[in-house]
Length: 144
Image (cartoon, rainbow, N blue to C red; front, top):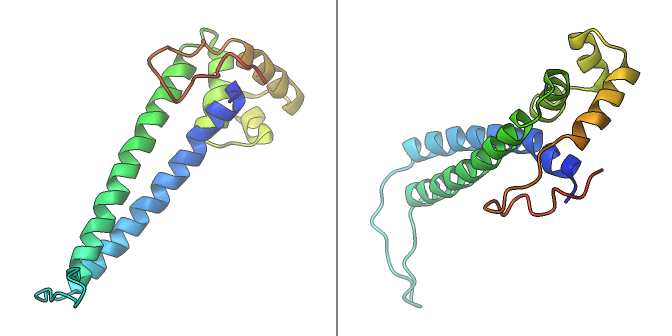
């Protein structure tokens, strides 16, 4: 995984978290409307789950996925904070955490698109190497 691919996960995971949270809201509404029914056993012996139980199980799974994604986003933020130059750090944050286009970043920072792309390239070269304890960043040394 290149530095760029690693950092790009930040915005994608944030979007994924938003979608999962929306799904949890819908599931909670469904669970609130579901009636609790005693579960009967099928002939095969596999217990059937009620609609409410299914909703709760899905919510639990989504919350675990959100926690994992939030952990990776936190690691990406820490990685970006490791870049010493504030302009480089700002370009990386705006691009990979806020999901801005080159034009939007240029407008925000009062730079041309071309200069933003130059800063971005330089910033990628200054992203700190992966820590040994993080499985999500084993190939950060490959620059792109």
